[in-house]
Each structure stands twice: as C-alpha cells, then as structure tokens.
Image (cartoon, rainbow, N blue to C red):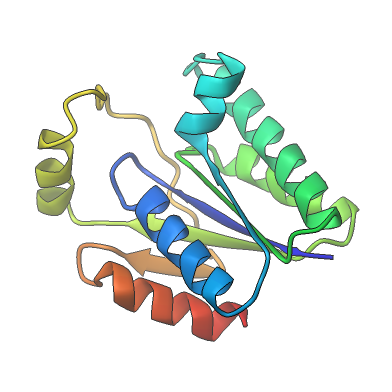
Length: 161
C-alpha cells in the first residue's frame, strides 16, 4: 500500500513544481510514483466549478483517485491542488484514513512579493483571491519563497522515506 503526499496551498505557491520534482526524485530512487496535478485533472474531467462547493467536490474526487492509486500499484501518490477549506482537507484525509493509507499533508506557502512575481508571468490564470484557511498544524510546511525547489525536495525526501 502506498502513501498520499497531499500538496496544497494558495495559487502559485509551487505545489505542482515541487510535487513534480519530488516525483522525479522518488522515481530515480526506484519508487513507483503518480502525480495528480489539479489543473490537468480538471482539463480531463471538464469540471471547472471554482465555487466553494465545486472546490470541495474536486478535492474529494482527487482524494478518491489518490486513494485508489495508493491502494494499487503506486508507492507514492502526489496530488497538488489549491484546496482552501480546512473542513474539505479533513474529508480528504478521512478518505485515506478509512482505507489505512498514510496521508501526509504538505502545506505550500510563499511570501506576497514572490507570489506576485510568479503570478505576473502566468497570465493564462486569473488569480482571484480565494479565501484560504491556513492550516493550524500541517504535517509538513514548505515556504517556497525561502527554499529552492531542490531544497524542498531534499526536505521532503528526508521526511517521507
């Protein structure tokens, strides 16, 4: 049975970048890895509802897919999504817990100056301010304004292997 490494945070905090880099690093070490990037899942399913209820539904869908993959052939499943609601994040954890699958929540954060710079180069996305409930005690917190992608991967490898 695999582990779910649940990457979440506000838009442009580096969730997809760090989860992809970690996926490559784990794969290079011989582990089977699945990366579930939220935007790609939305494109494939055609689900573009960004209301609080829509985000909750999308997160539960991602958690269900991750759980099934972790129950199957993957040692590590790495979903990456905005996921602003603490209650919804708890539901995602419950889906994994129900099946006895380790669920490690990884909160990605970044200072406002770095966020603004990142958002300015990604014009295809409209960055409305999503009300985001900051987690009280995530399993892992990474500040991508202070840490390079490589250092984030090193920290994660130390904690998940």
